[in-house]
Amino acid sequence: MARFLIELEHDATPKACKQAYEIILSSGSHFLTHAEWGCEDNEHYCWIMVDLDSKDEVRSIIPPLFRDDARIVELKQYKLEDFKNPAKNHNY
Image (tube, rainbow, N blue to C red; front, top):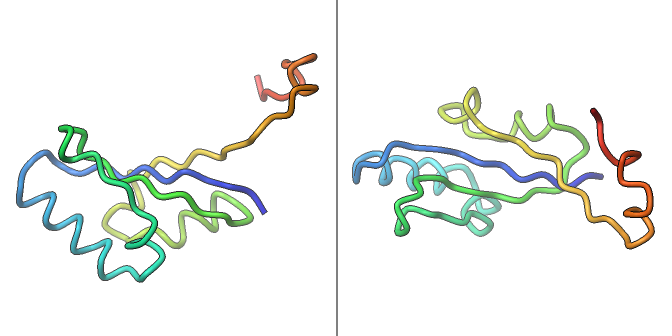
């Protein structure tokens, strides 16, 4: 299983923020309890970390209104020995 960061953007208006909150609220407890919001710092994003098998699986759980524009980033923690040959850890 891999760890992914989901980034969902919405417009910088009170109406858009409220709509985003309501969508996340109605999407189930995982989204609600794991969502981090940047709105109060004028960063109108919601970030959620999930552990799933693939980006396709992640995309399938994103609420439809956000799905097409969602940014999904696979995250990896490296060990000290991984930095001895950093090129092997990248897909260039």
